[in-house]
Image 1 (cartoon, helix red, strand yellow):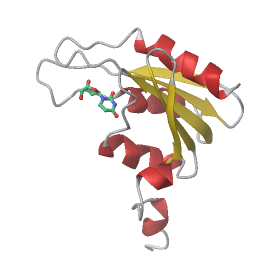
Image 2 (tube, rainbow, N blue to C red):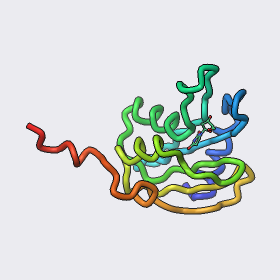
Image 3 (tube, rainbow, N blue to C red):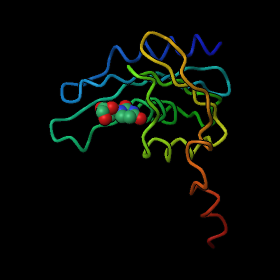
Image 4 (cartoon, rainbow, N blue to C red):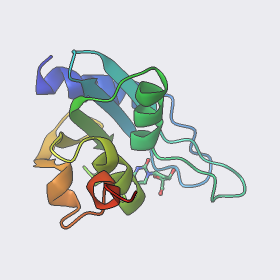
Length: 132
Ligand code: THU
């Protein structure tokens, strides 16, 4: 799976975004260590706060099917926007070293980074080890 293919999978996932309120379309494609790809889109709610981001949709789909090891995630938005703080935290939980590819809905690549770079000094599972 090339970066370009992962970005294409994120663009395909973005088509399903449910965005009646913000109109801000987001797609994500999460590549597992064993080569599977899980897509996700943002899903909004009239009461706003239950809204879930595309990154977490993809992550929850993957984890709920037994996946725990991730190699990369592509995120696409109209402006190559970066994952929100809540998604950074959730991605850090499973894959701090995972590559993060940011692109736009036309497939133009904007930036490559990692979860740890997006969440420096992150709080994670290691902080809760040996708690008795
Ligand atoms: N959104 C995402 O899906 N991912 C992010 O990392 C940033 C924000 C969504 C949530 C909401 O549906 C819309 O974008 C505007 O905030």
